[in-house]
Image 1 (cartoon, helix red, strand yellow):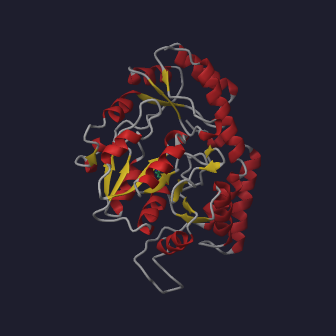
Image 2 (image 1 turned 30 degrees about the vertical axis):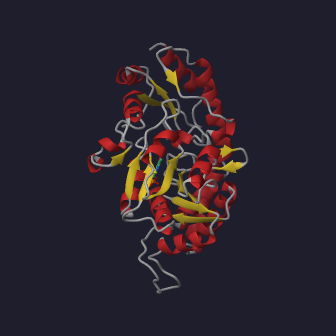
Image 3 (image 1 turned 180 degrees about the vertical axis):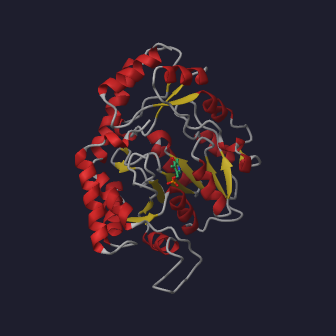
Length: 361
Ligand SMILES: *Cc1c(COP(=O)(O)O)cnc(C)c1O
């Protein structure tokens, strides 16, 4: 599903140079590399501010805290996401409310979100699952109509673009993860909150560092969620390759879309705009999913399931609030989805091997 060892020598040399730069600088926490990466990533996202944090989970939590979302407040999101999305809502003491997805995209359904709205709704936490931006004007309008914040979970959608706008710039803030397997990943954990709001960025910068105002002065109860210099330096090196990597992902998915002809395999709807999907994952649906997974393995093709268990079936979330009409689409998707290999190190031959294996199922 990934092959970091196959990355180019040019990238490896550049990461080693980044590590040497930090080693020799004697500056390891919240120094020039973090500042440079924050500026470059915010600029790439088309927003004014980026605050580097320890991981994507913390980026969401800090975003929620900056908006004063906590006990008694509801945040509507999807059951078809990484557990971290919900964990962030739970960690600030707010109440997650799960709306169902559309089957053709596996993204949140607007009509389901509408059914979940109450007087307590403070935010819609929109997850750009698998790398997709869809119907962005609709979400922006909806949230402004109902005076609720739009928060974007961009952990799978690095620089996905709708028109001229980038993931993370539609809502009040966007949360990025740079976990190694994301489209842009560190050599460990890293994350960033991006926003156009100056006050939010200043509060986020305090929260990630014990709530510290100026050195040893604490204005609020913060956390330790600092981004390491070493990871920021690595991310600067890897950022140089992101566009090329995303292009390669697009190419691979183009091959999949034109050559997977097995009628048992259902593809998700194509993106509404070419740049609106950065293809973090290539996901298909098939009734006999577990058998397809075994068949692929027999043909030496790995696959993963994103996600096998919708959030409301996870033990800590058994009683979670949800759409009164249920979450049947999420449940069906969880039973039938399978992620095929789709990463920039795949050779043309690898791509053909996946296609042949899928077609002979
Ligand atoms: C990876 C991921 C996260 C969490 O990011 P971490 O850096 O692992 O904390 C949150 N949401 C989604 C959709 C993710 O894919």
